[in-house]
Each structure stands twice: as C-alpha cells, then as structure tokens.
Amino acid sequence: MMLFDQLDKTQLKELLVKCWMTHDGSWFYNCARELGIDTANRLNKAAIKSLSVLEMQRIKKAMGQEKLKIKTFEQLKSFIDDAFSILKGDFMDFEYTFPEKNRIHWEMNQCFAYNGMKMIGFSKQYECGVIYRISCWLDALGIDHTIEPEIDMCLLNSYEKCSGDIILKL
Image (cartoon, rainbow, N blue to C red; front, side, top):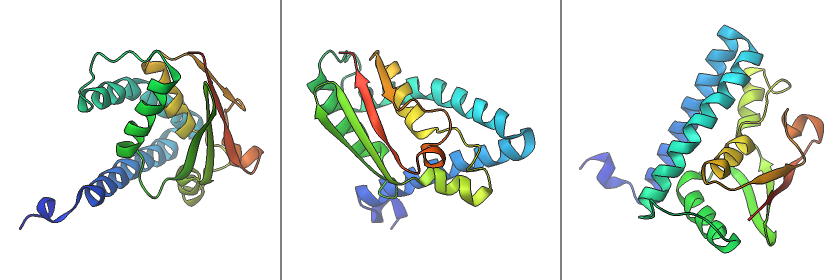
C-alpha cells in the first residue's frame, strides 16, 4: 500500500505544511547566508506578497468559490476558519479570535518562525513574515485593514510577546 493511502487527511496536511515551512525556512536561511539578512528579509516579503495572491485564488477554488467577493465580517470569519483548516499546521502554536466586529486578535504562543530564526542565528534581525503573510492574504482578498501594533521587526524582540489585532474596514 502506498504512503498516500496510509495517511489520513490530518497526517497528510501536517506533513505537507511542515515540508512547506521547512522549505520556506531553508530558503530564508540560504538567502540570509549568501546575500545578508537585510536582503533576505526584503526578498522574503516580496515572495510572500506575490505568493499570497495565488494562495488565496487556490483556496477559493478549493472551496468552490472562485468568484467569492468577501463583503461582510461574517463571510470573512467563515473564510478564515476554512482557510486555516488547511493552511495551519498543529506545530503552528497560535490562536486567533474575533473579539468584536471587524477585529481579528492573534496570540502566538510559540512562534515557529522565530524559533527557526533563533536556530539559524537571525532572530534579532528577522522581520516578521507570519503576520505579513496574513496581511497579504487580506490584501489579495481586497480587504482593507491595519495591524496593531505595527510590525517591522519580530514582536518577540521588542515586546517579548507576539499578539495584536487586525482591524478590518469592511
């Protein structure tokens, strides 16, 4: 029996998400080592920005909603829950809630990206790609928003906690 037939959906998703994140981290590490951390941060954000459009198109297609235009907070909440059921791995130790209309709150318990940056020696210079990716997903969906606190460097370096809010303009 083939491995594909032996894995249940959750096991398959976890394997694929871990491989995706390992590739992402390895790409970042090699760029930082070869080109410097500033260039790696810039290229990482450029890659995230261009990839996010394709990711959202693929998620909408997988949902059978290729023409979906999110107009309400309720639609966005449902979309986010559906998307994270595929895109979020169990090792990604974060939570998100919708504490009030047009607000998403996140709490990163253990940041997998920050831990990876610590392992390769770049945690102090790392510019957060995780929240940036979510922001780019919202941009790709045509949803105007702001992030509080504003993020450039990893929040675990400046606040020792990664949490905040995405304020939506729906």
